[in-house]
Image (tube, rainbow, N blue to C red; front, side):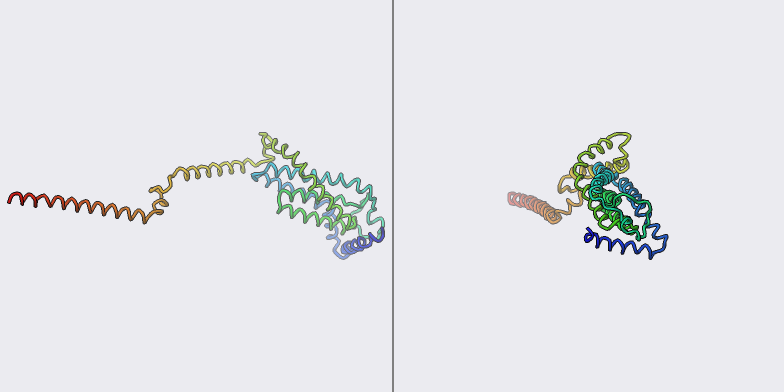
Length: 276
C-alpha cells in the first residue's frame, strides 16, 4: 500500500508546496474556488446553456440533456458513497500533518473526491448539449480538481477517480435518462404555462415566419412555367434560337411579298398579249 501511495504523495507535496510560495490572498482564492467557486460557476454556466438551448430547433431534447446534468451529478455522488466506504482511505492531512491545508474542517474518507465527481458530471452533462460551453465546463472541473490537490485535502488519485466516476455515470446512464426525460420536457413544452421553460416563444415565432416565407418563395418559383418569355432567364436561355426564328419568319414574309409581286406582274403581260 505504501509503495502505491509514494508517487501520489510526492505529487501532492509538490502541488501543495506551491501554496507556501504564493501570496496568501491567492491561496485563499484558490481554496474558495476549489470548495465552492467552481460549483457555482458551473451552475451559472448550466443556466446560460439552458437559456440558449431554448432557442434551438431541438430544444426539447437539449433541455432534457441539461436536466440530466445535475441529476447525473447526484447519481455520481450516490455512487461514490459505497466506494468511499469500501476503500476507507483517510484524508491526506491525517497521514501528512505537515501539509499546508487551505480548507479546514474536512473529514470523512478521501477516495474518491466528491467535488471532482460532482463537477465533472455537471461538465460532461453540459458538453453533451453544447460543445463550446461544455468544453469550458470541463476546463473548470479540471481546475477544481487541481485546487483540491493544491488545498491539501485530496490526493491526486482521489481527483482522477472522481473525474472518471462523474464521466462514467453521466455517459453510461444518459440513454436511459434521455428516454425518461424527453417525454417530460415535451409535455412541459406543450403546456401553455410552462412551455417557455423548454422553448423560446420569440425563436419559435421567428422560425415560423422564416418557414412561411420560404414556402411562399418555393410556391412562386414552382408556379412559373419553364422558359417563360416574361422571365429574364427564359429569354436568355434561347437567344440564338429566337434570333434564327425571327430571321426565318422575316425571310418567309419577304419571299411571300416577292412571290405576290411576281404573280401580280405576270397577269398584265398576259392581258397585253391578248389585246395585241
